[in-house]
Each structure stands twice: as structure tokens, then as C-alpha cells.
Image (tube, rainbow, N blue to C red; front, side):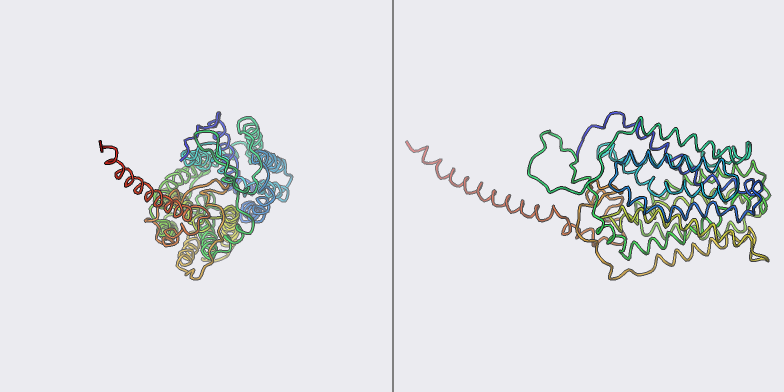
Length: 495
């Protein structure tokens, strides 16, 4: 393993990337708490205002893969700067929107940056530090996401309630511009990713080996498409779609649900959004630990808990104390599920994960769109089957459907064609199989493939066997030379 020293200023660069994620994720979630005052000011119903969540998620779903493909070979810092500029323009349009249609257009424009943003931030963070520090670098950048749920969205809600919903979008415009300046100042420029060159035998002149261009080269588009077509990947994407729809059928309308069904005031709802975020931070840690032990079992276990938690919240939302506990538990279960889903997707497409991870982000947001759309329909539905109280039960049913999908067989799946060694995150930096998020012993499925994965390595098994033959040949030569020395030794002792 390389002990390459960290590049100078990498802490500031990691901080800038974390700030970017904080701003972008805050912009995604902040509208949830603003639906009641925003709908009242613009003269639309709460379900219609919920289209701001649906439209944002659909824009991420449709625009994410397109933006990823268009920027796949562009320099990462330049891509980040362009996305941040587009992000600020979208929020500026939302802040100055004369009506609901213009506000929705601003949200869609902002959402076009989302699908590619997280992947580039993670890959850029990993490229800033030596290999043995990449996990900590990615965790440091991902902290921006957690802070957005704990602090960003609640602060945006509080600001919108105190100064009007437009002030929240003005704040997002300003923080987007600050994040752009931070990236331009602190994040070092990197060359555009290129295809892997033909390996040469020229050794590195330094004593410590450094990653080569081949190490960082991303797999080709054909390999990426083949990985995306893998039945295991398609099953996990379907699970993601259904379970996230169940979560966001409830979370999108959590503010009016807590206000009208539970009886909380606006300030109390803001505090409960902080409680939800705190549960999300705890859930992220819990989900990561469970996933490290056994991804497949953790995924099923957490989806089952989510279904039970949503069903229980259908009763708890009618009592204030129980509802507060339920909000924390929902945040915990919703965010505990994310690392299980992400890790399972990366493992299923480990040889060419870039397009698959982008598709995962799109499907995740498609689930948000479907959930918010379904929640709006249920709220507007007449009779006992409609209203805010029906949302948790609908979410529980969707979670159960996701649990059923995890049991679907994937026999006869296609293997990903041989290619560069699998990266741990989208970006092409090389890792070994023992550096995957879980060990071979912990994998409930796919362990046979990992144990026989040495046959698939483009370099490794054949070279090791060749080197073993050379060692055995050298050993025979040493033994032959030893016999010759013993034969000659008596001759030198003869007077």
C-alpha cells in the first residue's frame, strides 16, 4: 500500500467539498418545511406545492445521468464550478419568482446539478489524499450531507417562517456563491479523466510507488452499461425506488402532518425537523456498521424495521410525545437504509460502478418524486382512506413491497466483462478485493464470486502463478548450486 504523503492544503479542499454538499442537500430538503407558508403565499394547495419536491426529484432522475455522461471526461474542478454557478442561478430564479410556475422552474434548474454533484465530490475527495486515508476523506466530505439534515434544512425552515420563504432561497443563492469561491480557491485543479493507456515496463523513479493514469482511468461506456444491466443491480434499483417512495410519501408532508394531525405549531415543527436530522445521523452510523457485517442481511433487516416503524407512526402521529419519538425513529431508519443500499449497489457493479451509481441517484430521486406525488394524492383524497393520517400506512405498504423485491431470485445473471480493477467509489482509483466495504466472510451472497475473483483480475493470478514457477525454478537452481558447493568443499580441504 502506498504511503504517499497528503497533498498540501487537502484539509481546506475537503472542507470546501463538504460545504458544497451541505448547500446542495439543504436546498433539496428545505422545501419540505416551507410547504405550508409557501402554499398560502402563492395561493396553491399543499399537494400542489408538493410538486416542488416532485419536480426537483424528477429533474434529478432525468438530468442526472445525462449530466454525468456529458461531464464524464471534463476536469472535476471545472465541472464543480459550473454546477455551482447553475445552482446559484436556479435559486436566484426561485427567490425572485412571481408565481408558482417560475418557482418550479427554478427548482428544476437547481436540480440539474444534484445528480452529478455528490459523485464528483466523493471522487475528488478520494483523489486528494493517499490510498490509506481515502475512507476518512470521503467520510469528512459526507459530513456535509449529515449537517444539511440536522442544521441546514431546519435553519432554512426557521428563516423562511421568520422572514418569508423567499429569504431562504436568497440565502441558498448566497451560500452557493460562497461555495463556488471556496472550490475555486481551495480545491486543486485535476486533469480530465482519460482512457487507460497501454502499460509500460518503465519503473517509477521514486522509491514510493504513486498511482498511475491507468489506476485512475474510468471503465469504458460499454462496461458501465453492462454493469447497469446486471439483474442484481436492476433488483437493487427497484428496491431503492419502492422504499424511498414509502419514506418520502411521509417525509414530504411531515410539516402539515405534524401541524394538522398531531397539533404542533410552526416553531415546534422546526425543532422536530432537527430531531429527524439527529435520527438521520445516528441511523447513518448504525447502517454503516450493520452493512459492514453483512450487506444483504442488513438491507432486508432495515427495510423490515422501516415498514414496522411507518406502521407504528400511523398510530403515534395522533399523540405529541409519541409523534416526537416517531420522528426520530423515522430519521434513524430512513438514513440507516442509505449505506446498505449504496454498498449493495457498488458491490453488484464493482467493476464499472460510475454509471450505476449515477443511475442509483436518479432512481433514489425518482422514488422521492413518486412518494411525494402519491402523498399529495392521498392528502387530497376524500373519506377515511385520505388525509395526512393515511400517509404512514401507505409508506409501510411500499416498504413491504421493497422487502419482497429483495427476495427475488437473480439466477443466470450476466457477469460484468473483464476490465480495470474495481474502484470503491465512482472515479477509477484502484483497490484490491480485500479493501471492499465488507470482507469475503461477511458477504451472504456473491462470496463464491469474490473467492474466485482472482481468475477475473487482468493482472494478478496469472502473474502470481508465473512468479511462483520462477521462484520454484530459482529454488531448484539454489539447491543445485548448494550441491556443487558441497562437492567442491572436500576438494579445497585436500592437501
